[in-house]
Length: 216
Length: 80
Image (cartoon, rainbow over all chains, first blue to last red; front, side, top):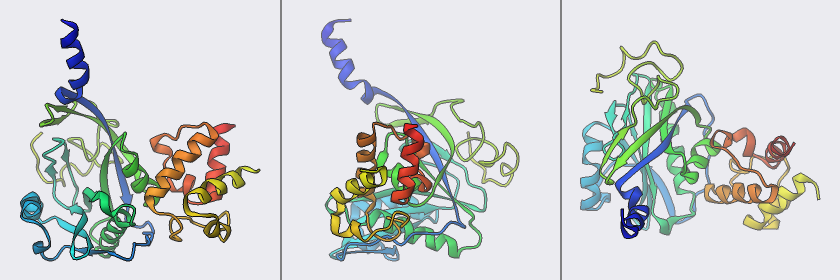
């Protein structure tokens, strides 16, 4: 291989093929939810009307809404400044390719985002707090999962330190050409849990039969 | 300066000494609204640099970082 090709490969390796460790964390619905202080110009609410979203954002969340997921939005000056989503449905995350398998008493928090111009404002913590407080009002849900790339220190800190999410599983995901994502086979540790084909996070047994059917 | 005092200094560098002077060692710094989650990330970075430690993902837990006293205890175990 020529030195030019080697240089190109070194620079673009991650664009071609990337293996990333993913921490799966869980929040127990009996935990106390903190009350983050929000900046005066930011508010947080449950998404009731998609008219708040731009056409591009509406297209982005169409599949979320189609499976009945609930959105929580941060609003600044009457426009969207951030969001987080909660799903009760087993599904495949299209970007990472990971299947998140949920038992009937489990939910999954995803897509936490706050625009850079609205940081720091307490919006990220405010969004999580609003969502988790609603979860606590729903007696059917006892656990909320999230997954975080191991190098994402901001999300790791927010979910673990502020809200007390605790690690239940670790997997490795593969990303090819930044388009195709999938779980590295047999990378689940432990080999059962929300990102595995069987078991609940605490045991190999149970839960699998109760889970919504999902292709492997 | 004690370890608690050093952590207090780091916290002061982020949110100002006026606010931190009113905080007791056991006060929950996030729940009381003293610190935003982004500042919390900076604080953990500062603690790592000041004490020469590396915080592993699993160690990012409320019991290690929820208060000045919690951080001090955690640093003590890491530097023992």
